[in-house]
Amino acid sequence: METVVLKRGREFTLVRRHPWIFAESVESCSGAPAAGEIVRIANRDGTVFGSGFYSPQSRIAVRVLSFDPDATPDDAFVADRTAAAIGRRAEYFAHGATDAVRLVNAESDGLPGVVADCYAGWIVIQLSCAGADAFKKTIAETLMKYTPGAKGVWERSDVEVRARENLQPSTGPVTGEEPPELVEISENGLRFLVDVRKGHKTGFYLDQRDARAATGRYGCNRDVLNCFSYTGGFGIACRAAGATSVVHLDSSQGALDLARKNTELAEGCYCASEYECADVFSQLRKYRDARKSFDLIVLDPPKFADSKGAVMKAARGYKDINLLAMKLLRPDGILATFSCSGAMDEELFCKVVSEAAADARRDFQILERTSAPSDHPVSLSFPQGRYLKGLVLRAV
Ligand code: SAH
View 1: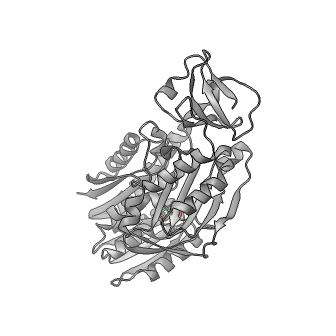
View 2 (view 1 turned 180 degrees about the horizontal axis):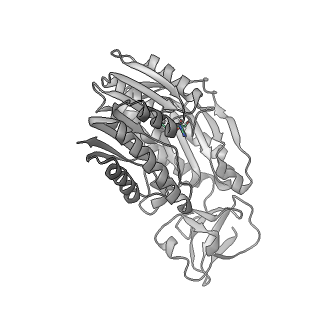
View 3 (view 1 turned 135 degrees about the horizontal axis):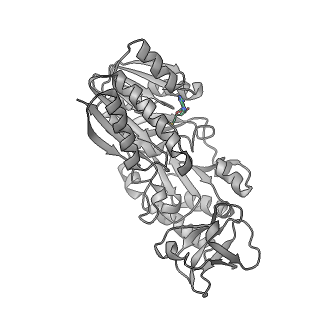
């Protein structure tokens, strides 16, 4: 194993068990390890702190696998970590109302660059760094072996970050059976069709499961506007709770087609559903000009800020849509508003939403604060893992 030597004083993040070593903290490296090779991490005095995946071309030079100086991570080590992560999801499999579950949540499960989601037995993996890529076979075989009801592993390593390490996108079957075009899952008892081959992320926004449930509780007898609807999740949760009408609004016609199929799949009472393919920023203005109003509005936009530098511009975007939505909200209305920009922390998000409320000259109560569910755990020493936050507000 080659050794990455840190600059003086840079070991403090390791002592706090943070799993990333940035390129600017590295002084030198023995030999010339290839991207993805496992390297030992030491300081200039030769004290070893652990080992991790080496990424010579990335801003994150080493992703820590073990903080044990004596560990020599190999296939068995990665298999153990994978099996342990699956074991920690036992409650989800035992309970059964939800069969779409994240099995491995990257750094927070001790496996940097590895995401694995299970959709009713169809497992989808997403490997985002060279080190994770090198263990693809071991990870896939372990997932097949230990996941209850596993049918096959499909790869969706088509994330942009791979390009930073010169990794080509890689998608397709890895082991076991191939998934159908659309996989039917159950989330809190509601059925959805998921396109694991071409859908966003690995097919579904599993991280918003609890937020959909929290928002759905307020759906009864309300006219709902589901902005950034993707395949319908929030609106369908409101419909199941007895919403009067739901407008799904998204810029992707493909997502809306699936939202329609998902609505047809859902049983329950009559609820008028509409599917509007448009840009949310301009459509909210059109509704304002047409004096339309709603009882419950969901704002679940994609990531607006990719980096700390982009935060202020992102803040303007969040404020804009929140202000527009607040103006469309009827008295006693509910606003469920979210941000998945990791660079914008919860405090700043709340500040932006409260500034929007001030500009709208309306008062709101916080009914719920939401975050990713427990199958997306966040390591205590890895605050970057906590990117998703949300507020369910009531206009008073
Ligand atoms: N709420 C969804 C997930 C939303 S993901 C769920 O619960 O599953 C973000 C969605 O926003 C994507 O479907 C994307 O197509 C859509 N989108 C991105 N930018 C948009 C824009 N400017 N206007 C409308 N939709 C947009």
